Image (spheres, rainbow, N blue to C red):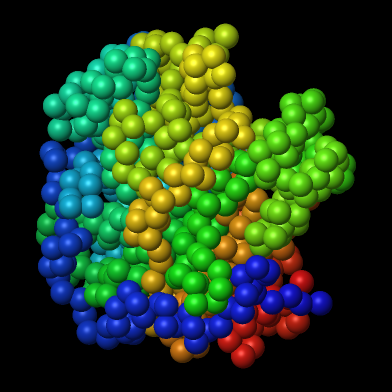
Amino acid sequence: MTHTMPIAPLARLTAAALAAGALLGGCATSRPTQAPAATPAAAHRAERLAAPVRYELDGVSDDLLTAGLGTAGLLGPPPAFADPLRPTARELRRRAIYMNYRGLADLAAAPGSGPAVAGTELLVGLRSPAGPSTVLLQIPRDFDAARPCLVAVASSGSRGIYGALPTAGGWGLRHGCAVVHTDKGTGSGAFDVAGGRGLRIDGTIGEPGDPLLSFAPDPAGVARLAAARPDAVLFRHANSGLNVEAHWGEYLLEAIDTALQLLGAEYPDRAAGPFEPANTLVIAAGISNGGGAVLRALELDTAGWIDGAVASEPNVLPPPREEHGAATTSLYDLAVAHLLLQPCALLADDDPTSPFLAATTAARPALAGWCRELAARGELRADSTAAQAAEARERLLALGILPEALRLGHFNVHASLWSAIAVAYTAAYARMAPDELPCGASFAATDAAGLPRALTGEEFARLFADSAGIAPTAGVNLVMPGADGVPRAANFGSVELALCLRGLRGRVDAGLAATAARPRADTRPLVILHGRGDGLVPVTYSSRPYFLASSAAGGGTAGVRYYEVERGQHFDAVLPLPGFAGHYVAMQPFFDRAMDLVAAQLRGGAGLPPSQVVREAILDAPGADAITIDGGILVIPR
């Protein structure tokens, strides 16, 4: 059995029409055959703020891959600080690496296993027209400067500079490649309004004016916020006043350029001369938001700096589809819709094995109240809780969300994913000032009663390591005024918040438009990988239409392949939990396999296997599981 892309209500998504949309971004051109220039275009060169922060790692007490923790350390308690109020940069680095493994890796699969990786690490703050970012270059001791390879990675989600190490970065280090990381302008940079302090790129605390602050918010906006919400905490992704997502591709290209310069300084006497894209194998890789950054970098890379790429679960906004009768739908729009409807829709889920179902059962009275409020506000027509829940679920399915993805609704709601994304991304897309709170929402630590309080010195000191860059995280919560006007913790969100954010859609239009992808003709090997059960970034709104658009722009499948993992979902880290274990498979092994395939082709090996639905493994001959394009329609085997 097969089904075709698009799923209702996306109408008929044709390759020809998507090609026209793709060309709006400029002429479609193949990858240049000439050697790229040694000196990159000014658009991709960023100013370094200071000399790199340097770590020499012996591979025994400390290493590039796990900060010396190894599998046993990653599975143990968080690394402690000698002085919790004044942790050193090295201590913060170790804890940040630990926390990223815990947040991204399947802990049942021996994360960080294998030999420790000795080498050198260089941390750099950059500033460019795209905005400030942080770049990290890791050079393993077995790096071959005569036959150099560089893996360029972008952190997932809103994570900091180590937010791709357990995934794409780990593959590069294990294969002797230098790895350059970018936090893509998001990261765990935070600013404590009460203390008037921020975090430096190495995680230590810095005062305003410090050039290595990873995030320096607008002082006037901070002053106004201090008067209204003195205990507020600011995060770079949401509160920088920049729409950083519009520049994710630029940040990755700036990181590649910076890496080549730093490698040249490390190996000044290299016989082959300076490191350049023409003499260095460059593979770009990332997952989630990092995967979106990879795809955007490929689109911008008209000089051919990147040789091949892997993007897994990419958060990417495909080309506009207004010509097909349906507007482009972004993660932002889906988050707002889910925030509004999914708490009620959960009550219509009759799968007794769904993850976090027990949390829904415990919250049933509150969720039933959510349904009633939706009906009272005219969002639902049904007059009973059961019927209202069924109607809310049908509304979500009508958006094109697969039932497999809705199975994870209990987890997504109770983990506050939709409120976190909707609030932070609204502020970013609208380029709001620090005190311009979307629908009255801000971020702060809270006390036992949910009232905002100042961060303690110890909490702020470890925020670089513990924060995922978007609240709720590391004890910092989403805070909103209640019915009495008093701000309180509100991570779960509310119907009022969802409707208010939906009403701000016009404020974010320009910001969203700036993030839209524009695939172009390209013969470089590119693997797009996605789990069919992804409940956060649905395949129907990201990888499937992007693959079709990319193929259409090239007049055929060219170098791009799409592998849809039948039992994959977005978060490997939750796989050991009830409801996940045994039902889903880890995406990381398929990501590693895709990296192997791309690297092998770039080194003269066979071409990539055809696009396919992946049941157990990526097959050279997928047979009936092949994903095809028939008459301009993407056909996905069921």
